[in-house]
Length: 205
Figure 1 (spheres, rainbow, N blue to C red):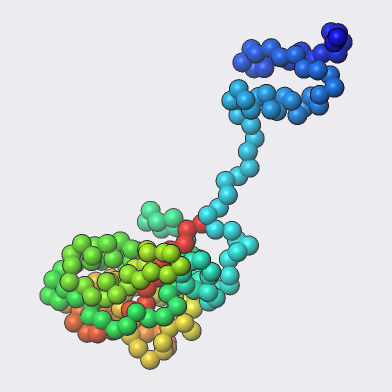
Figure 2 (cartoon, rainbow, N blue to C red; figure 1 turned 90 degrees about the vertical axis):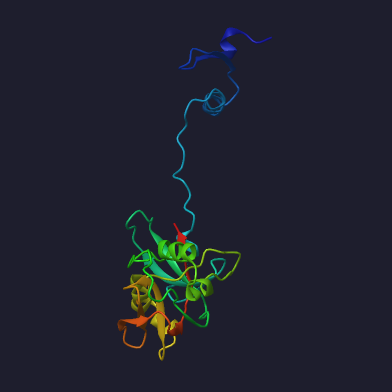
C-alpha cells in the first residue's frame, strides 16, 4: 500500500489538486494533466502553406502547383505575399474583347481582380482562355500589366519572343496593355486584336 512518502501532491493554477505516484516521471505527468484541463502550452510556429525546402528554382516547373515558378511577389494592396505560377504554355491567341466599352479591369498589378471584373462584364475572350486547369488548380487568370513585367524580369525564357501578350489591364475603352518578351516592351493594343494569352495563378506562403 502506498504511503504519503510515495506520493507527490500537485495543485494546478485552476485549483485542481492531484496526487502523483513518485515512480511516475513527474514532468511528463504535469504536462499531460495541464493539457487536459486546457492550460495553454507552448506551441510551434504555424506551418507555412508552402515549404521553402520544396520550392523549385525560379523558371522550373513546380510539381503540384500547375506550372512554372515565376518568382516571389511581395504583399501589396491587400494581396498577401505569393509566388506567381505561370502556365507551361500559351492558351492561344484571342481578342481582349469589349471594344468601345469601359471596363472596371483597370488595376496595373492585380490580374485576379481584373479577371473577376472582366468575367462579370462578359464578352472578353482572352480572359476566358486564361481559365485553364492544371494539377487540380482552377484559379488561373489573365495577368495584369505589372505581372507580365514581373514575368519578363524573372522568366522571360518561358515566353515566346516573337509575339505580343495581353494583360488584363485596360488602358481605355478601346485599348488594353500588352507586352513582348524579347526586350520587355510594354505598349497598348486595340481590344479587337488577337494576341497571345499566358495564364497565371498565385501560390500563397
